[in-house]
Image (cartoon, rainbow, N blue to C red):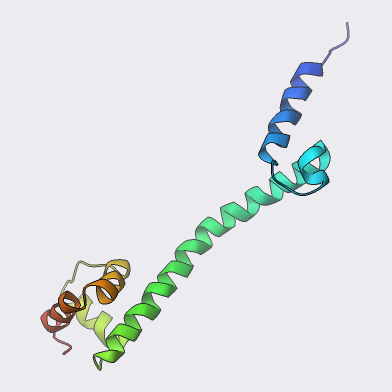
Length: 115
């Protein structure tokens, strides 16, 4: 007796084409091209979820450095002093404070002892 895969294959192809919805041209309609596009998209999103963390950390450091230099302090000096004083705030929180709460950020600088 032969094996009929009609519904199984149809469901698998439909799943891939649904994932490829919105892609241009044959990438959204044909299974073969859609499968390639979905695999590539998955690889890119996996890689970029990790890259995003690096990119944001770099952004926070740039923002912090800009805010610190306006106070006459460099980033490296501040981070060293923050580590020595066991300051429990990360770069994300510090950069947000520097932008939105400059008065509190100034107090943190005094507490750390760099200003």
